[in-house]
Image (tube, rainbow, N blue to C red):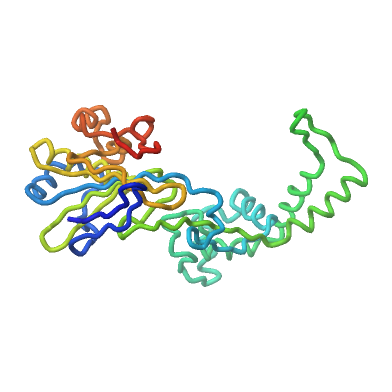
Length: 320
């Protein structure tokens, strides 16, 4: 299915080359449908393999290195506008759907979306919300300013855990400085780690300390699906861990390649096992099986990330 080349001494992976075109496994499965036995029937006798990659937190010195991390700066709204929008969401008179419908008809506003991700991420502002905010922004900007400037009244000593009331000229000076500060636009910098791995292994959710891929050779191409990230990936992990576990229980050989992406963004070989192994996290939950039953079903096939002896983060990179 694939060939891996690595330095025998350092374990640094030089190349992972798949023998066929690699494509995403596009089969649609009903959400929360427990159907691993049905899938396993279609995978019997085919070449099925798995790859687990553990990921160390990246060394802090690499965040400013363009070869290891993407940086992007964003201009954000001022602190006072952010607070005003929060107040608007809590206290605006346009809070009810009937009020919104009447206002839309009255103003003849188009019902197009402000951001294409809005359905997935409700916190994104819609064009309509921006229009509504414009109608009341002067009131809420003023309320936000008062709220933020009132924070100048108190000085908190973290060592003594005591609060001191600020008065007179000191308070006046603080408020003047604060007022200038809260109206200034802000800059937010995002840092996205670069994963120097062949496709599809380079697709990562950076919050994850590990991810697992399941590969199927369908004769023409190599299909993959992976788990360990968002809810759909966690569901995939549970489902296909059970699929591979089912095949192994029936006597089919499924190898598991274990790799480590270290703090220096270097991919290292750990070990290749002749048997199937799965991360025990997410084998149930999003995939609707009981966790206790799942552990029993996959007994002898699970790796527990939380247990030190299974984390494989030691200097020898040895699974034993």
